[in-house]
Image (cartoon, rainbow, N blue to C red; front, side, top):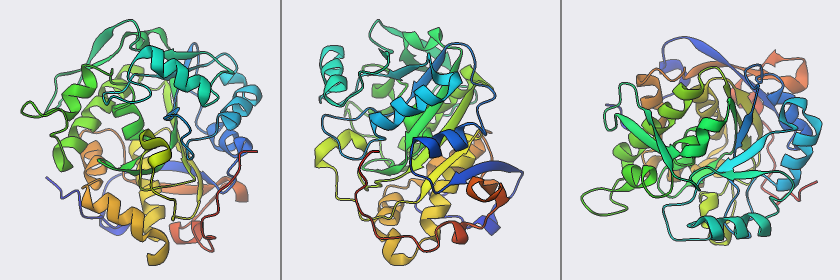
Length: 329
C-alpha cells in the first residue's frame, strides 16, 4: 500500500494517459469552455453534484456562476442540483435545516434535490476492501447522468477535496453511508489517514460505476482554503493563489492534475495546502483510485485558452498572483 503522505512525481508514474482540459478563465464562461469538452455523456435527466456550503461560507463556487452556466449550457437547462444531508450536526444535518441553508446561500434559481430526503438505496462497491456496497440517497436512481462540479480546496480530514471527495462523501447519505465511511470502533469520527481515503474512494466507485460513461468532472481551483466548505465562515483564510478550471471524463486524472498544479507552484505559494494534504495522507485518494481501476494518474494537460495546445504544469502556474478575494461576476 502506498504512503498517502508522499507525493509521487509525474515521471515516476506508469500507465496510460488521459486528457485533462485547462483554462485560466475563472468565470461561468470558463466553466462552460471546459465542460463542453467533456460533456458527451451528459444526457437525459441530469444531476449536478456540487457543494452548496454551510451558511455564509465564503469559498464555494458562487451560485451566480452556476445559474449563468445553466442558462448558457443547453445540456444543463433542466438539470437538478443534488446534495445529501450531513453526518455532522450543522446547518445541513436535517432536510429542513438544509433547505434553509440552501435559501440563505442563494441556491434558489433551480431545483435542489436532497437525495436522502426520502430514504436510501445501496449500490455495489466492486472489488472493495472495506465495503461490498455503499448507502446513498434513494433519489440518485432518478438521474441518467451526473455532472460533478467541484470546488477544489484543502480538507480538514481528507487533505484535499476534489471530485473524489465531492462524490464519495457528498453522495453517501447522511445517516448510514457517511457513518460507514467515518465510524470506527463506536467512535463516529475514528477513521483517518489511509483508511479514510480508501473508504471515501470506494464510496465514489459505487457512484461512478452506477453512471458509467454518463458522468463527467470539472474542478474549480479558486478560493482554495486548507479548510473544506463544510466549515463555512470558520474556514481558514485563503493563502494559495487562484489557478483556473480543469475538466476530464477521468476522475483520477482531474484530481491528480489539480494536485500536480499545486505542487508545481512555488514553495511560498503552496506551503499551506501541501502541508494539509501530506499530514492527512491525502495522496492515498489518488493511489487507491488507480489501484481500483478508476482512472489514470498520467494525462495530457490541454490549454483551451491557447488553441487546445498541450501545456506543461509549470507553465500553467507560471506568474500566479497572490490570492485576492474574487467577487462573483
